[in-house]
Image (cartoon, rainbow, N blue to C red; front, side, top):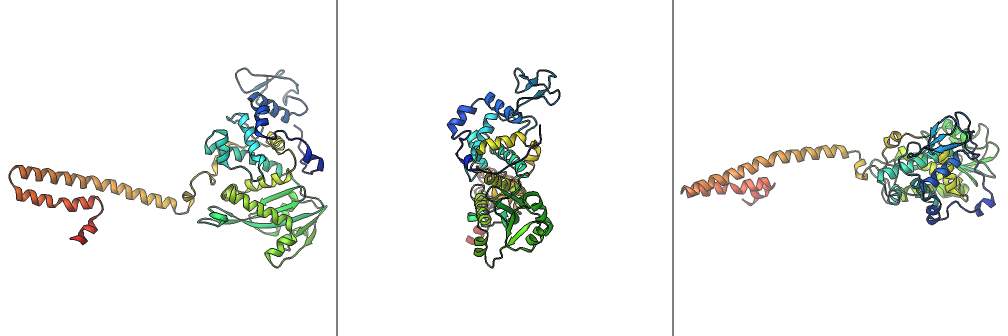
Length: 397
């Protein structure tokens, strides 16, 4: 396949063109069958018509009883998803199309639980579906160059880990720096390992056009990085409110990003933050167009991500938030030891209770009433010990 060039420029005419699927009814009517979805994926992979990558032949046939096709000349077999982000998937393509529709129809994005409920799959599969789609978005965002009449550049700290209401950090939470470059037509973002001039310059070299003026707030690392070939307009600010007034677009995007992470995702882990930043920037860069058609095109052209790598990092959907706290495993081990000790301690107590009762019954039958009453007096402390009430019984006595 030919190399890909990414263009994110938007025109007024694109906002008025009809979408691929305006609603769920149109989606089901057009892509309700697996065959329709496969043909659409093939048209995305070979927009000029099929051409076998081995022999160059232009015709193929479906393999009977399988979700594969065969070249009519060299018999090379392939599927509609082979070589794409969805390679080796066992989920029907119709469900992938429905997930793409859910992700693109709402500016806030879709949660893994809502996708799982809509597709009728497990929560783990819902997480894997979203991660594959975000991988395609990330591959497309890697080619984006931000430019235009104006470009704003700024960084923010995003709380990762456990978070409470309104984004309040909880136990084990950390702050990760995120750098955003915003223009009227595109946005690029990256989670930074550090906030040095070299890191800023590498991001700007990959995503910021040198032909346009770049506005920043005067951070030393930003001004030092932009001095390497960009026309920088420094707008220093003495307060946070002043910074929002001097760089309104990028700070508006930062607020929307944090609202998405706290509202739709209910907090994210540091390992998955870049995926969510890619999704947020991709939606901004493709707003006003046919987002579902663009996402399916990016899916068809994105490289395959092995399922083992998708499952390697467990994020917020992987476990209950309390189980991600630092001391959770230690507390669980201590609780298990206590439960094992309780199980070992209770059978001897129950055995002593049974033996005392049997001996008291035998003494009573033999006429030894005084001895039987003495044995029955021993039942109270044994019962209290079995119920964990020994201290209370001692205070009463």
